[in-house]
Image (cartoon, rainbow, N blue to C red; front, side):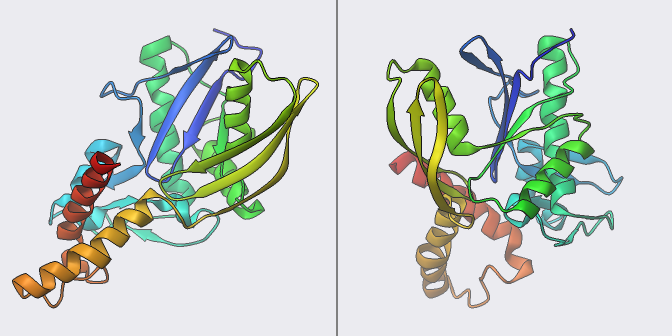
Length: 259
């Protein structure tokens, strides 16, 4: 179908991503090929140079033979030239190229659900993303095949979603977004049918994933070293990458259950 408005929105997250469509004032999340609402922001490249995205890619982190062929949390390096080297295939990709693979996966999920090829979508970004990070996000969208991709600050997106459902037409709102890798806080003002940012702040290196690593490094690893004679167990040891991926996943699950 031919659209005259941009009705799709994408949360390109550090740990998980999602795509949704706006129908009137209601939002409908498009499920992926596993029938999940969210897609893991993970990319795995196999020895045949085939690219895999999502939960299956993330699970490869826990296998010794493929841990060096999977990357996650690359959003944290958006806007940089950091090289991600896939050992088996020999391929090297930049953060925006990895992000584009996630966007391609989300875009492809729309076809079987709605029968249309998405050309445009709004992509949300942290409020404290700098220009180079926003430019990298736009580049990722371009590589993924989007013709238009206006960027919207995450607190603004949250305020708009809340505003659709609120009877309050005038006042100040405090919005915070504690994500997988970034934290945003913003004061929004609603007045006479418009919503705008009064002030905002945040930390591009603070999120749920950082808490997971803190649990692993400050609580679990010291216990394992002391009780099982594992002096080389550390995040900086590449030989421990697969084992630490399993430990981090277990820490994340335990954290979620407790909270």
